[in-house]
Image (cartoon, rainbow, N blue to C red):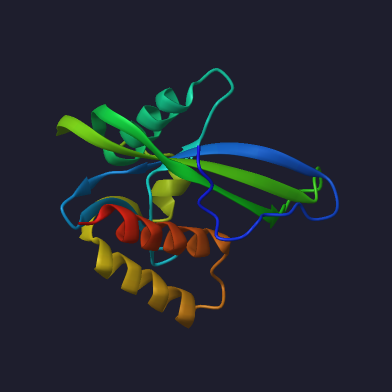
Length: 169
């Protein structure tokens, strides 16, 4: 899987654990399937953690089913890997290394009702189709106007810009 980061990612000092995630890139022309989260006022790619017993593809489908209601995926193609380190907020480790494997895919058939986790519903998360330029502009504005946003918004903005540059014709 090719590295999407623009610079070399270096581990910070202190203890660290790695969390593998997978993220879906689903396009319809210039529209992209994203998750809007009201609490953070941002758009993000659907996806999440890969459980120990899962393949990347199984985790991708499970996360899309939970977050968007997608029932089936086809044409799953690797897009690239984005790596980041963050300070961890629990006492067991100092840092977390997040490895996000991103895949372009298509959704087959109808959508069912998303089965989001409680915290996702509480944060006002919902799946939306949005023009990629509007999503990028929105996330840029949110990043510029809110001092509480974390590294996830930086990651999502970077990935959206990369997707636009490489996949939108």
